[in-house]
Image 1 (tube, rainbow, N blue to C red):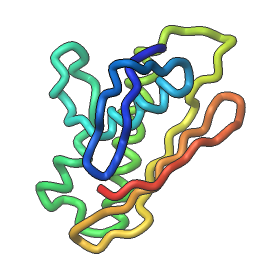
Image 2: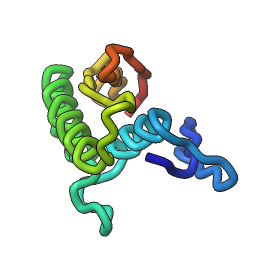
Image 3: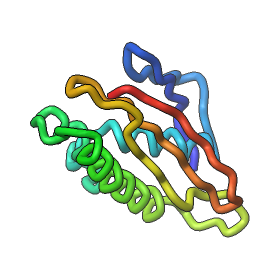
Length: 130
């Protein structure tokens, strides 16, 4: 998988058209974007995205337990999309599992931890405020 490089920051996401990412960097970027896109908003890939932000806006993330459950559903949706749309290459490291769980939740903002487990056993992670 290859794509344009995205820069994630407090102001949002910025596309860097002069730079590219490939392999696992592209996969990780794809995972992050999938969590940030509403399901059904991509006309080319209607399966892309999650309902996580929508549920937050609707006030349906009422506590850390609910946020944890919704994070699990979102992680499952993203893993399914990434797996289904990744050209199979048995020699390449791939994403095996995605873990998304709440770190803190105060009713106004939700801090989630995202961890990717790869087929080699390596783990990649970050923490983000939603």
